[in-house]
Length: 239
Image 1 (cartoon, rainbow, N blue to C red):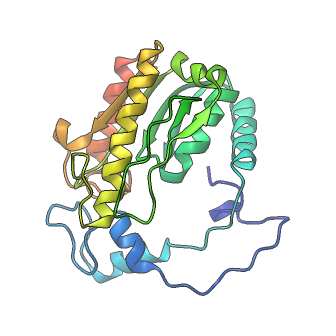
Image 2 (image 1 turned 120 degrees about the vertical axis):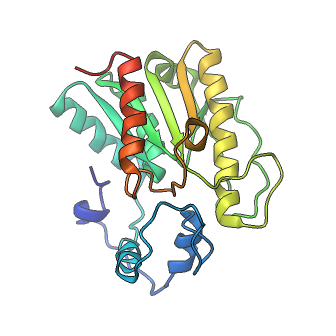
């Protein structure tokens, strides 16, 4: 599903003016394809000029959207479709958590490199120092809402080329995800402390290497799908 006001759901009743602001290199680095114009040696991406052109064509303007609008839409989708498993990616991660808080039709979440994580009020960890333009900031929610996430199985996947540790690195595209992976692990500890079932999987640890931020879109996406399917089977979520 495209979020309201984005992609195929781009029509809006609210006006907005976009600035002419080329930012190709920003997203190339942030999405861990490499350090522009170079690729990471192990990146599972096609290297021809046309494929790179198609990647840049995906960098469309982003209309500002309130999270409530996205969540309202997702809850409506689940009301229509019935019970299901919610798969989120990147900026869709934040609305995904809230969708599960509001809809009992969400029976599990698979999240691919989400950008945000909710914590109970009073338990949001400090924001890590980073060289990235986008600090990883935990979000405070009520304990009642947070506890709803402890009632379903959740798995979060991260791709390759993410540094470890608690010190910033000069490569800001990588450091952006170092802090998010650290935040994800802190979040899972809190979920599980309250009786939840959350897992954080760094794909190189299970033998899947070379993934960028778009885990589902590149040359080894079948391997990623296989990892996801094994998790679904382990949780009794397949038919």
